[in-house]
Amino acid sequence: MSFPYEKRFKRYLQNDKLVVKTTENDVCHDVNDLFIYLRNFNENYRRSGDLSLLEESDVIEYMIMLQTKRKIKNTTYNKVLTHLNTYFKFLFKNKLSSSLPTVTLQGLKRSPKQIEDVYGWQVELPGYLSSHTISNYTKMVLLLLAHFYAISEIVSPDFYHVLQREDWQKYEKDFIVQFQNEESDKQQMQNCHDLFLKTRLDLSAPRLSLAGLHKVLKKDQPHCSLPLVPRRLRQAAIAAYLNEHQNLTDGQLCGSLHLDLASLNYYRTMSRQHIL
Image (tube, rainbow, N blue to C red; front, side, top):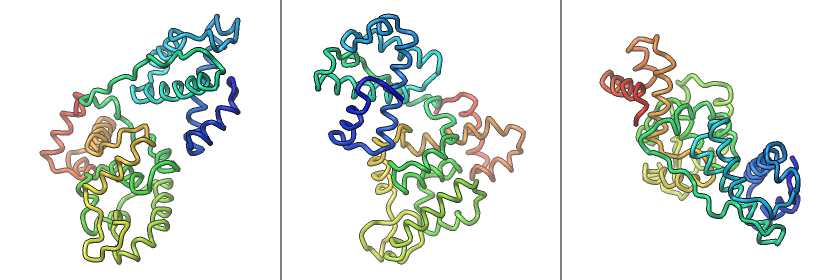
């Protein structure tokens, strides 16, 4: 990885922005990717290498490439733009460049009715479960949503027994072991084995409420590019499963997706239309 003022920019992220290592890597990856593109496809930058000559149109050209060639989602577009804006503001603030090519660029809106934004999100589950920037509770929510459990269901008493019944992949088992090890002290304190517990001692009502769990997700949202909206994520996961397992019987689908027949028919229609 190599882009102008890389080492100084990393120190800025660490000391001024106080970002964690994974965020630093993510930001620097996107900045570096821009300069790889400029060095290969932007004649003006290739000739001069002058940061102050970079214009809004140069960045727009790169962002259009990401959309048309790499087919990035709107959420990824917005994340990349934020990272590039951080970099160019750093250059301008430190008088390393007189150009602010991203300052007027706007992020893209996400249509709440389209499942394309989150369709197939569960294939990225291994990365989310190994993330160091989101909490154990958010990771567990994502794991259970990927296995088609409703958010209201997973906060119910004794739901933790599901962990013994479900057929987990190895990376999921590894996370569950980690989760149980790291949450065991809280479970002992509350004298309760459920998954989502309050941080303060409350033996009469130790479980985190649904509203409390949503607060956890909201707190983690700035650290996760995936929109932490449980209903949408579960629906998208179900839609993907239905599209990929059309050979299964209604009974098999209901069993795998934890649905009754009426709900199955609803989700089947939704998956065909790709509309939430």
